[in-house]
Image (cartoon, rainbow, N blue to C red; front, side, top):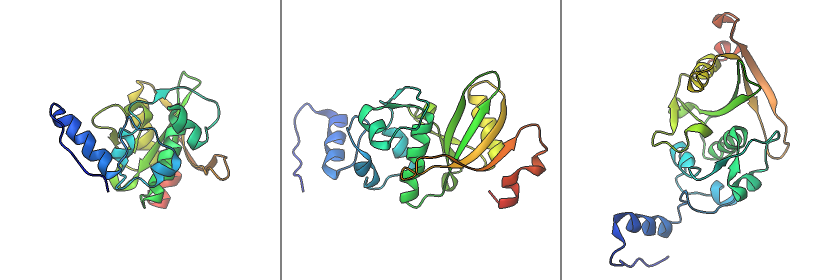
Amino acid sequence: MRSLRWHPGVGLLGALLVLTSAWGALAPSSRFGLQELEHEPDLTPGHFADLFTDFDYVYGPEVQPADFFLRNRAGDCDDYAILANHVLQLRGYKTRLIRVELVGTTISHAVCYVTEKRAYLDYNNRKYFFNLERSRPSIREIAEKVADSFAKNWTTATEYTYSYANPRKRTVCSVVKTEPPERDPDRRTGH
């Protein structure tokens, strides 16, 4: 165990940083790999988002291996959502990966929905104090909130799975905006 010493002139923020490092907890400025993140004590969805405030947005056509994303401190919404899904499931959270196709763009946006928090983690919100976006659990409701955050409309939204061991996205179910909500596949599964 590390010993703590008070240093004059450190201030309250400095003292908090010293205490944080003494407890072994990661901070946004920390350099860490997947193993450190998987073993972070008391990791919550909010704390997970806090750790990525200094990461840069860099689009990539493929999902990066977790350690590559963490080492380079740069990636896109897929990298972030998939990593959140992986790490938070290890902590016992029930998570879902949701990809939303936006109208008038060639992009889609991925988020990680956390059932216990009734909110999703969004790479675009990681720098905000309130870094969890509240939403009801249906794919349609998540898609509407994501599209609103871009001031865009959406066409389809898909729940998918991904594993670093077998790096391939697998569709669970999709919702088409123009279809009646009562026909949404996740309405029947109780999400």
